[in-house]
Amino acid sequence: MPDQPQPSASNRFKAEMPKIPGVRTTPERQSGPGGGPWLIVGGLAAVLVAVFVGGRLLSKSRRAETTPAPPAQIEVPADTPAAIPDLPVPVATEANPVIAKVGELAKVWDSRQFMFRNRATNENLPALLIRLPGTSSGLSAGYWALVMKEAYGSCQLEYLQDPAKLSNDYGYHGAKHPMLGNPCSRTAYDPLKYTSIPGNALARGAIVQGSDLRPPLGIEVKIQGKEILALRTE
Image (tube, rainbow, N blue to C red; front, side, top):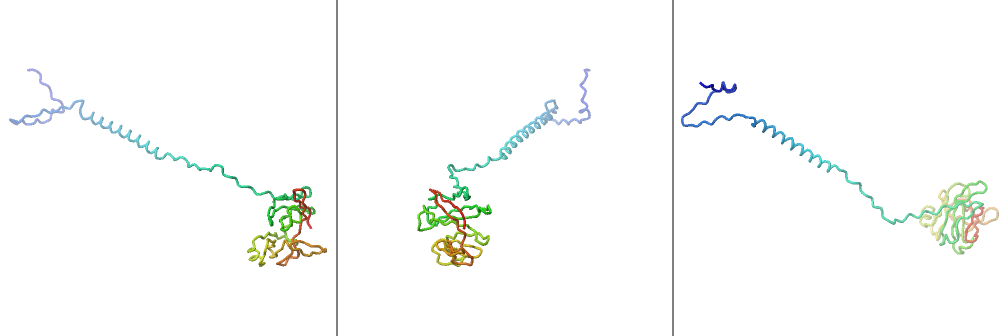
C-alpha cells in the first residue's frame, strides 16, 4: 500500500468537519507566503511614506508663514530745504570792532545782538544795536548801542517790542514804540528820550517807569564805510 501523506503538526489534532449529504464543502484555504503579513508590512510602509510627505509639506508651510516681512522703508522727500542757520553773534574787540553792516538793520526798530569786550576786565558783555527812527541808516545817530545789563547790578535787560507785555509786566501803559526793560526792578527805559547823569552829561534811555538809578550803559557807535563799529562804553 502506497505511503499516505502525513498530516502536519498543526492539523494533526484538528477535528474534521462533518460531511453532510447534499452539501458541498469548501476546501480549507492554505496559508502561503503571499498572505496577510506582507499586506500589513505594505500598509505600514504606505502610512510611513504619507506621514513623511505630510511632515515635509507642513514644515514648508510653517517656514513660509514665519518668514519675517521686509522692514518698512521711510520715504525721504527730495529737495527738502535746509533750515537757515542764525547769524553768529559778533564780538566787538579793540582789534575788530565790527558788529554789523549798513543795511542789515533795514527797518526802524530792527535790532542785532552782539558781545562787547570790556577793555578793563576783558569780559564779554551782552549788548544790543537798535536802528532808531528819524535818521539815515548811514549815520551813527541812526543807531543806539547799549550794554544789556543793568548799570549797578547783574540783571539782564530785555528789548520790549510788545506793548501788552509793557502794560502787563511793567505797568507802563500807552507805549508807542519799543522800549528796554529791567525785569528785576520793573524799570522801563525810553530809547527816544535823554536824561541827565552825574558828570553833567546826557544819556539815552530815560527812565519812564521804575526805580533804577540811571539808564543802561551806552556804547559809542561809528560808521566806517559800510561797516558799523562799536568802540567804547561810557
